[in-house]
Image (cartoon, rainbow, N blue to C red):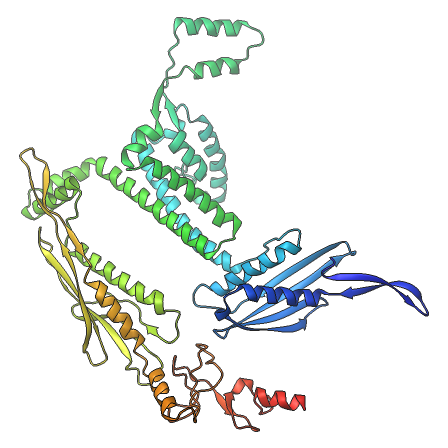
Length: 580
C-alpha cells in the first residue's frame, strides 16, 4: 500500500487537522516499466511512452514500441479497498503477428518477475497467447490418446475376448466404466447400441488396466485347510460375508498379468513406454486444464507427444505383424505364386529378418523429399521472419523442376532470386544406387552451387539355415549438402545489391549527400528508406522494398514519414515551435 498511497496528517486554518492522501501509483508504474525494459534485450525495444490514467482513475497506461515497429499497450489498474488491501491488474494488448510473438512472452514474464517482490501473490487470469499453444497441443493429444485406446483395445479383445472388462480381477474398473457408460449413452444416444467400454473409460483407468491389471481364473479351489478356515470364519458372529468373500478372493489363481503377459511382447522398451505414457498424461492434463504454457515448454510437450505416438505406432505394427489375421496369411500365400509378389516377399523378409532398410521406389523418393524438406526448413527457419526475404512454399517437384525459391523483395523487377531445382535418378533394385541432384540457380538459370544426395539399397541372401543374411548394407549419404548449404546461405545474403550501392554512393559523395532517411522503415525497422531518387525510388526501403509514404516538412524541407507530420511540420520543427 505504501508504494501506491501515503497518508499524512496536516493542519488547515479553517478545518483543523485531517488526513491527506498522496497518490504514488503513477510513479510506481513508471519505475516498473523502466526496470522491465532494462532487463529485456535492448535490440528488441525502441521506446516507451506514458499515456497517463485512461478510462478510470488510477489506470496507468503505457505504450512500448519495438524495433520491429509494433506497439504493445500496458495498463496498470490500481484498486484499493478501505486503505487495507490493494490489487494491481495488468493488461497487455499486443499486435497480431504471423508467428509466435516471443517479444510478448519475454515482456509478460519480465513484468511478472519485477512485480512479484512488491506483492503478496501473482495470479494469471487470461493469457490468449498461452491458450493458443494449449489448443494446438490438445488437438495432438486427442489423436494420440485415440491411438493408444485403439492399440489397447486390439490387444485386450484379441487375448481376453470382447467381454474382457468382465474378467475376474477387473471389478473396480468395470464399475467405473458402467457408471460413465450411462452418462455417455445419455449424451450420445445415437451410439447407445455400440460397445463403449473404451469410450467410457478415463485415460487414467485405461493406463491402470494396462500397467497394473491382473485377471484371475473363474474357479477358486479351496484346500482342506482353506475350507476349514472359511467354516471357522462363518461360525464367528463378528465375521461378515465381506470378510469371507475377501478371503476367498485372495485365494484366486492369477490367469493373466496384463502388462507383462499381453503388452510387453509387442513393446521394444517397456520402461520407456511407461515413462512416455506418464509424461503424456501429465502434458495432456496440463494443456487441458492449466492453460498456461511458454514456447519452450510447448516444444518439450511436442517432443513428448512425438515420442509417445512413435512408441504406440511401433507397438501396434508389431502386434499386427505377429497376430496376423488368417485372411491376411492366405492372401500372402496366394501372392507368393506370382513372381512379382515373390520378389516383394523376398525384399520384405530381407528387411524384417536382417533389420536393415530395403527401400522401394516411393520410399527412396520419400527419403529424398525428407532431405529436401530439411534443407527447406534450414532456410525457412533462418529467413521466414525477416521481411527482407521472401521464401516460397515447398513443392514436390517433378523432373528438373523448382522445389522452392528465395527472393529479395527490395529489388523492384523481382529478379533477385535463387531457385532450388532437383532431379531424381532412382533405382530401387537390391544393392543399387539412387541419386537426388540438388542445384541452386540464379535468375538466368546459371548454377550457383550443386549437391548430390545418395542412397545405396541394402542387399542379402538366404543362408543354409533358411535365415536371411545381409551382404550389402544400406547407406544414406547427405555429406554433399555441407558445402552446398554454405554456398546457398552466402548467395542469399548477397541477393540485395542496394546496401553495397548505398555504401559506394556515400563514399563517392564523402557524406555530402544524404541518400536515406534518419528514421527506420515502418515494415522492417531498418534505416534504409530512400530520400534520393538517384539511389532508389523515394520512400522505398532498400532492405525490404516496402513503400513508405513520405512528405516534406513545410518548414525545414526534410522528408519524413507522412504519419509523423503534425500540421505539415516534422517532429523536430514541431518540438522547436513548442519550445518557442
